[in-house]
Image 1 (tube, one colour):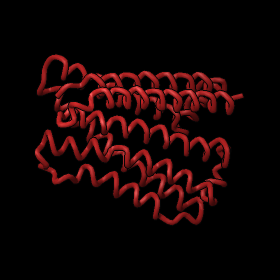
Image 2: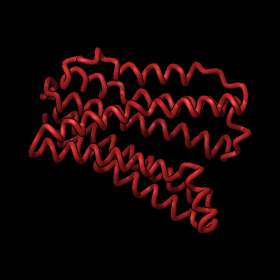
Image 3: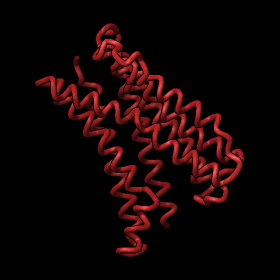
Amino acid sequence: MQFEILFGLTILVDIIKFILFLILLKNLIQYKNKRERPAYNLLVGFTILMFCLFLSRFFYIIFDFVLTKFNISLYPLSPNIWFWKLGSATSSIGLIHILYFLDKKIYNLKFKGIFGILPLIGAIILILFPIKNLEDFQILSFISIFFATGAIIVLIIFTDLIRKTVGSVRRMGIFIVTGLILWTIGGTFLNINIVNYFIEMIGNWIQIPIYIISAMIKIIGLILFSNGAIKLEI
């Protein structure tokens, strides 16, 4: 029952991602006459990111629910591991356009585009890192945590933007930052260590509420993020 509920909630969140991608894409097409505006180029980046998040979770769904069914001993085996690698790499490269453009337009390439290069390097490492056993998988899984620095950089830049601006730009910046934070919190809820802590403290039944709360937080975060991306005017 827990497996089926988690599967259903995961599918729901991924469907929401695809719907939001279509909404972002629709707005992108409508505003094609504003190609030179920073807001338009950021919307391009946000649209790419949303599609990559959708595609990434699709790969993870195959890995988790079809190939391994959360049996950790099956994680390093081929072709299983390649779906995990593709899921991790796809989410990483989704940030490249946003990070490069933010560096270019807001900081005049003060950081030499390195922000955009970091996710690409991370994706390459994820794909090329050899996985022969469970220990290798755990090492790469630990290393992949540091690839989340791209999302942290986006948060820092938009927090700085909020501090320096007023009106609509500030409100939409708050939407984007809040959405990213909620998305991160929702994903953290499903960390195996956190789930096990609540199970030991409350009981096995707590898993289902945790899954539901995590999915709701993620959906709210995605909607706030997308709304801010569509209405941001800089």
